[in-house]
Image (cartoon, rainbow, N blue to C red; front, top):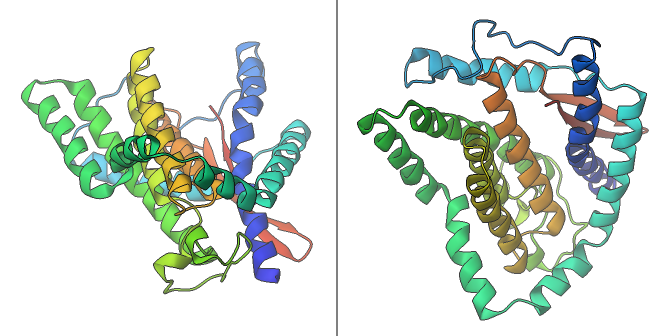
Length: 296
């Protein structure tokens, strides 16, 4: 029970990242009105539309971005904490209803939705994702399209960094998948070696899909591309629930990790990565969790 409670606190804190767009609006408005300056990336010479090429600097960016994500301290004021507490309450409600949501999803799935979901979910499978992104880079190279090359390279970075975070959480929490029939509150806690059936939290497919979709949507910011990119990512995440492979809270948190990691990677190459996505340990009584913040 204690492991389950500790892990739930972790999940709840992770879920608070969904509140940060609201927090960021206040921060952005303050800066525009002559308030405190926004945080500046370590890459002070990076212009807004800086090119990204497959070279030594690109791979060094992995280290820089990972360091910024892991070590940037959270800077929440009172309003931020109030918002975070409110969203954590929503996370608690979602976690408490995971079993009901799962039953509803299984009762309402059809052959058509399964087929659509299965085809779309390939977007979250690394075996297909890598060739697709590689094809994007090849096109960008042959067509001398710098924007396409940049998008593909940042997608790869976002995909890899998201994978690191997700795998750490999977082994740290050991949540049982729905198909084990052990219930949503079954968590093993930290283990180096975990069975695949005990690595439900968070969703790898959902996080992977959103990590790439976010980069593509950010680089091609129009009506069509973001709609398609996020649509594919959302179907990928939801399909994992309807296939009894993940709880709804798994897919939500996984998708959020992919989304905010993608945003952080894109921001870092626009001269605004430092301090935008940050992890910070949090202690509530005897329970230990982790908070994630993202500032636009």
